[in-house]
Amino acid sequence: MDQHIFSFKTDIVRISIPEKMNNPFAMEIPEIVKVAAKEFQAFISSESKNWEHDFRVKKGKMFGILVVQKTNGSYAFLGTNSGKLPGNVECNRFVPSVFDDSTDDYFINRGMKELSEIGNKIKETNNESKIKELTERRKQKSFALQQQLFENYRFSNINGHEQNVLQIFELSRHGKPPAAAGECAAPKLLQYAFKHQLKPIALAEFWWGKSTKNEEREHKHFYPACRNKCRPILEYILNDTDLFKQGNAYQQKNQN
Image (cartoon, rainbow, N blue to C red):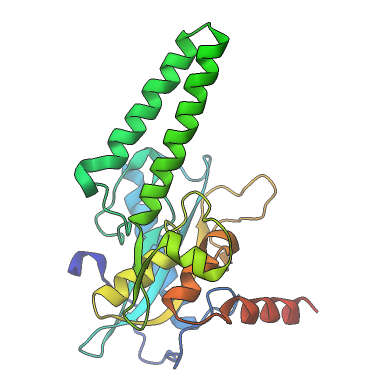
């Protein structure tokens, strides 16, 4: 566990520690997590030199940090990326995915290989009826694989209850979970903290790298947790169904 915990290099004695964790859907970023973000960004800048991906010219990515209090009372922080790193690179200092890809003898790897094989057969086939049959088979296989994957993304909430992604979205009445639900930075960080008896203090997510074409994401800027993937999961983890409403109210207040 120690490899995933970053100790502060900055003297944080004079920095105010929030009594309650900030709302991940709002844009109010506590000073303590801004300090953690600056240190984590310095780590990313150094570490990414080994990733063969220049974030200044290639697609950027969302990262997250969570300031935590350890059982001995001291403060530290966790960091991770949203989704996968470029080229499926792995960094052992980042909080890992909630899903262990070795589950059920690597079912996800086997399933993706089968989908790829069906795709190759479609390319090699000229018979239209055969193409339709293979396309439908790939569609059904892909759906079944996605459902199995969601069943294996399991989250514990602040009260110790556990549900998988399908159950969480069903309880939230949000509908079916979108692809990659459970892989965003905030849920991964909170899940890790609860699992290892680390008290969440402050959370933030920021964009690292080249801005998106519409400039909705800019380098080093902080952004609230995404709504379609994170909302039901974070509300479940924190056992707070009013989080989203509070976030909206905060944003509207600051827009007026």
